[in-house]
Image (cartoon, rainbow, N blue to C red; front, side):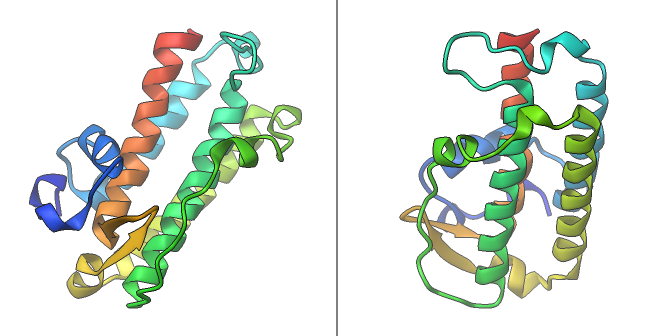
Length: 171
């Protein structure tokens, strides 16, 4: 399943930004490939950059990796709920509240990457377990409609978005 196969009614609002950044590959393959590319990319960042902030009040690279994990957990939770045909509208989340309540900068980069890898592998197994019908189910999150499969592409595109931010503002 490729992002180009998503139907117009499968996502709305800001989700499209991340889906567009996910690329044109297969969902399952891209969930795996993008993780490996990201880990390889982060491992090549100089050690002195992990705690760097490009401006006052901005997140560090470690903060952003934690943000990626928090967001992926939320996106995957939404996908789980919708795949099980739960039609309860799900609220948005305030990313700064999450970032302000973590100790990501006290953790090693290897610990963060190991956790990210474990999380993604769990989500890969989840997505592989879904039927076509479950992947196409749609729910409401952040006041916008989105399908289970579109949420998978959001996970990929969100990660790629932040990798681009690393390249443009941190390195």
